Image (cartoon, rainbow, N blue to C red; front, side, top):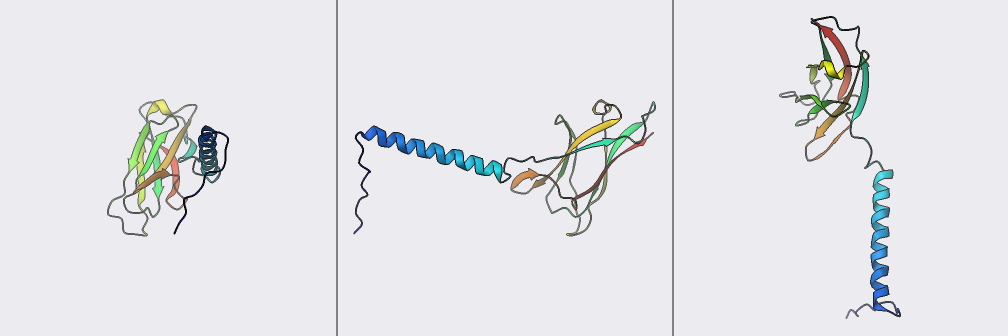
Length: 148
């Protein structure tokens, strides 16, 4: 037969409740610290600063060229500005497992270009999980091109 557990002897029962609350708080703080140290609080976007190949002439448009390698089924590559404005979402469809997803071109709004440079953040979604930084195999190359 199991015996009921005895509480430690304390002069006041309220002291025992406060001790338990303090231990819970300490355990929660330690858990949060472990998440941050082990990478749970790390960045979820790859930030790239790219230079235009040359200054834009009147009537020209800057485009972002994104080359994708094999990307898992159901994943999307999200490209946004440094301020969080979405430039585009790439959703490869009907790509066989293990094959490159191809090269995708996204138009760059003029207001995101400053001093001949643009900063973009690239993330990849995961089915049932949080977005993350794409690997070098998933996003192979990102460049700015200019066309009339």
